Length: 282
Image (cartoon, rainbow, N blue to C red):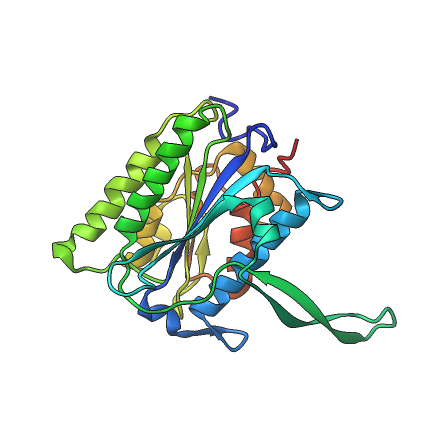
């Protein structure tokens, strides 16, 4: 379908974004801005949801043009999968967990910077605890998408943004890896009037070269990257335009995937993945 993944989000036909958040123990590793991987990932997701709220606000009213699920995996220990929050945007806007005061540097209009207090609503707290049950997390996302598509078959195709720093844990006789692969393929095979659901993967690593929007796993250095590449969707045309807006370059057969993401890239990638492809607001 030439119009795949191009249907506009609207109050009548809301989009659906699922954030899958790795909360395994290794997310406690130092990352950026004096934060560990879990803290920085939570910060980016909280900011992204607040930006979605602002973009979809008309005066005081938040328009429910998108439904958001935040799913944590590993954070409650072992193989836990936790539906942190699933709501329409207006509910996020009305009921944050808490409001955090952050210092933000802004221009003083005379070439200098001043620090101001910024209030940021918080929807997910950082956790770094258990294993990496990515297969279970994808299975849960699959159930959510199936339920959504039964009720809303005409809506824009759902999008999963998975943020992880590694492989599904190798216990369970390696079955977790196979499960993640199988379930991801099943999700990407669902048919909607707007094409197939999309899975975009952000791998937060340390050290090895960063790569983004590759079109072949030959360019990738490590097994984590190759695995996540294999469960990432090809980027549809509508999203290629969005990538350009975010200053990201995309090849003909690029997958929605970044490996060893630096902090700035993680922010860009999540903005791209949650943009609905283009400025798809009706």
